[in-house]
Each structure stands twice: as structure tokens, then as C-alpha cells.
Amino acid sequence: MSEGIGQFLPIMRMPKLITFALPSVETIESDSSSEIKKLEKLLPKARSLLTENGVLGGTYVIECTSRLIWSDLAVEKQMWKHHAHVHMVAVAPGIHRSKLKNFCEMLMPLGLGRINYKAPKGKWVEYPGVKFYLTAEKQVAKYIGKYLVKDQRSSRTFGVLRGREELVPSESGTGDGNTEPDDIHDGERTVDSR
Image (cartoon, rainbow, N blue to C red; front, side):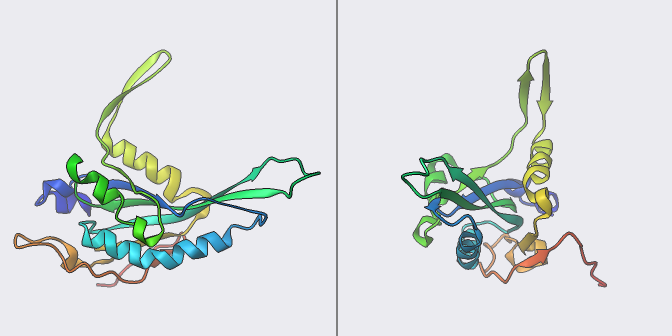
């Protein structure tokens, strides 16, 4: 989809890699489901803000990493650190450096952290004894392989990836900025009979 839009809007040619999160919390609870629920409650507003700021759509997964904080159990309770966050591949514009700080801080008023926004470009990678060129397409494929399909998580889509053609910018301006509920994929894809 991004490549098709990129034919007419070169700024949208390459998918962008977006990550954002709730602030990490330390708790005695080992179960991280409450953090995931907090993040899920904020997602409709976050998607709306992203769409209003030029993100046409994307696919994403919610992940929550948890780790045990080592302590002296004779004196302190066992503590856990939970970090709920979103990994997204999005159809989105390139952001000029002068506007990147504001763009990356747009979700902070919702209680989320700064956006990590990456527009992959080809680069040379060196390992001991070998040097190779890693294309932008391979970087996106690596990101998808690492985050969007690991641990059989459910991926979700929004915007143009759900057929919202009105979100695609025209020569006269941008889409209307509306979002809709998630389309959740549990490993099985449905085929439209259109």
C-alpha cells in the first residue's frame, strides 16, 4: 500500500517504523495485563492524533516487557518492572528535522512517552570479516519479523490499511483525520469478496 501511494506522493514511499510507550512502572505484581489495558484505552486517541498529523494508517502490535528487579528479599518485597509499548509499521510522511521534536512529543499529553520515529534508509553494515549493504526494504522486513510476528501476538491495522481511501491526501489537502476501531488479526487473514 505504501509503495502504491508513494507513486503519487514520494514522501510516503517508504513505510515508517514507529514505537511509543506508557512510562515504565515498578510494582509487586508480576502480571502485566493491567499495563496493556491502560495502553489499549489510550490507543484510539493516539491513532487519531497520529492520523491528524499525517500518518495514513499502519499495522501494529502491543507488547509489554516485564523484568524482575533484583532486591534483598529479606528486607524488600520482590518488584517487577513493566514496560507496555506499541511497535508500528505505518504509511506516513517523512518529517523534517525542524518539526521532528514536536511530532515525536504529540502523544505526551495523553500520558504516553515520546515517539521513536524511523524512516529507514539503506546503509552499510559491518561485522567482523564481512561488510554488506542493508536496504531500507530489508530493514522494514527485519522490523516486521522481529516485532509484528513474534510470540504469535495479534497485529492490528488502522487507516488506509483498512481501506480508508478518504485518508489518502489529495492535491487539495489531507484526509479527514478520523479513526476507527482496531481490526485485530489473530494469525488468520480474511479475504474480502469484493
